[in-house]
Amino acid sequence: MIAKLDLEEIKNYMIDLAKKGGIMMKSVNPSVDDSCEKNNSADRVTATDKAIEAMVKSGMAIKYPDIEFLGEETFKDGQKLTDEPTLVCDPIDGTLNFIHGFPNYAISLALTVCKAPIIGVVYNPARGDLFTAIKGRGAFLTRWDGTESALPIRPQADPINKLASCLCALEYGNDRQSHKWELRTHMVDRLLSKNGGMAHSLRSSGSAALDFCYVAAGWLDIFWEGGCWIWDVAAGFVIAQEAGGIVVGANPGDWNPSLEGRSYFAVRGAASGQREVVEEVWELMGDRRFTFNS
Image 1 (tube, rainbow, N blue to C red):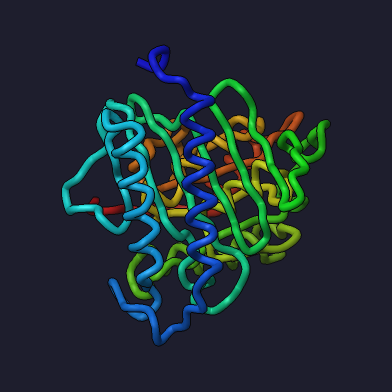
Image 2: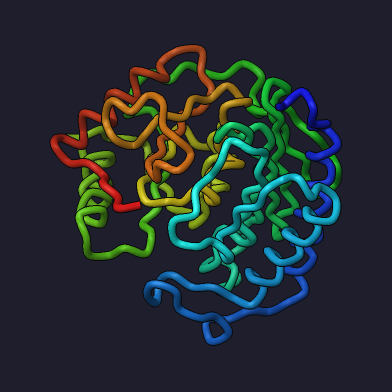
């Protein structure tokens, strides 16, 4: 199935769509008052989210009518990823950042085949950072001035010695009262405390897609997350892998997570220590686990 696809051509078209989405984001001045609640006040959507997804969906339908589409804003309950080539779209990952003017948000586009990502494109128009990857062909960062760098940024990735040497990322999400909230706040303490991992520090930048890309770049050592959806992570998943990183599940023992499993743990490329730091983080969870109804 993959052999019949011109992956370079598709990637370049996805980049064109991502940059059009970036222009749409930069052309508006959103605020909290302009957005609508989805699940609660911490889960919001803007007209720009919907307009960008509509643009991407129609563009793909015209150029590649045989490629299926799965998007955040048009997702229907029960809809599942198939084995067929599918464009997975998050029009704005980091909508809260977008409406507050915090420059860490992105359009995230992935092409999947047989339920696995083979192309990833993540574009942050506020910084002009474009992260891309094709399965088996490496991952790259193109800056606002056109400068392209292979990922990770450091060509010789340092070993990961222990969690105590790591800069970590975790997102809080919009679920602020269930077991998932309790587990996240538990892990903040366990990752940072002297009696836990004593990690260098913890970042929560508001975009899972960009967290994956920052792991790919080597700017973050790990990103541990439960609760995201496929559109949040599909592009970053392949970008991190193509930069030498590994992606496992947030729950202990999940060495081969599915894209739709909603549990993810990315570790940057390293000469050694990737699996060891995974097991160190898993141990900090104790008996707690992420569970999801869908």
